[in-house]
Image 1: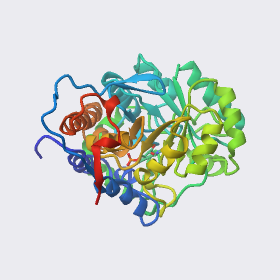
Image 2: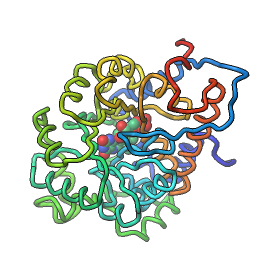
Image 3: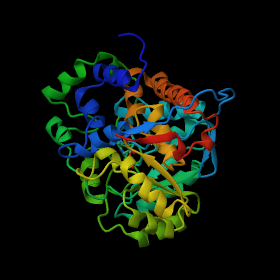
Image 4: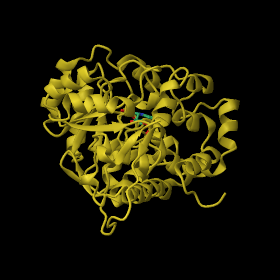
Length: 380
Ligand SMILES: Cc1cc2nc3c(=O)[nH]c(=O)nc-3n(C[C@H](O)[C@H](O)[C@H](O)COP(=O)(O)O)c2cc1C
């Protein structure tokens, strides 16, 4: 295959390199996957306004997200089991993000631990928190994120119960993988992935094993995850977490203006308009379709970010035009990572940066901070 030019190219390469159960884990949504598909397709409904004969020199994509400088308004989204797309995946992606000047968000359900990522980065990364029933464990995660100098806590609000993803059930997904004939076959047909994986010790949930009560070894993790995600999580808990953390807080998984208002009431620094990449409530609207009404409701009180379905720099530009101060990519960086390791993450970011830069120019703008709804010509 020729050098990858698009995120879709990276996806094809990742499919060839990553064992099926882990590639499918990234490329799946809940139930019929209708929300997963809508996240992507609704972006193409939005049309850009072409402007000509304006000065296009000296362009910049530099801006801020929650007051922190970013080289473009794109962060890496928290994704579980990233270290199964590629050995040491979280450490590689965090370094690529740091070099690129964009935030990296480490998931609670990562393979590499908070301390692993801190050991290979020089600037603060962000930590995503899932709230568990065991509050001592939650407090310990917050303490560890502070010790690692994380500069934002991303609290995920939309996954206290897991949306059913058929592919994962059919594949018998687990980390580390089970050693049945099917799983061994899936790995044996991906020898480069296996070679890298044999050279690392990091093959289980590094934030959990050895830290949470009764999870001394890998075998206890699935039971822990099933029992520990707290379905009683409420806005009161958000206040408690904000107090314990004491730093910048981002609430992730807001898809409704009423919830956005409640999130703004907590005094959080930002919300992420998100449906978890279509992995939770199948049938929910796409993130981009909900952005304008949420910006209308709370844009004057809190920073609004968005994730879900971004596959190009054009998509980022459309989200910014509709009021997002920042965006996040999940699958695009996972595909890059699975395809080519750290270089693939850099390439995914670079593909998006170039598309955004040229598109912005063709819309007659030179500074991402000047991009607004005037660059949108309509829908259809
Ligand atoms: C494989 C995978 C794992 C994910 N794991 C997490 C997670 O651990 N925590 C979280 O808050 N969101 C998680 N998400 C959701 C992402 O943070 C993000 O909302 C989503 O990927 C954005 O959509 P996109 O993949 O279309 O960019 C995950 C998404 C994927 C694809």
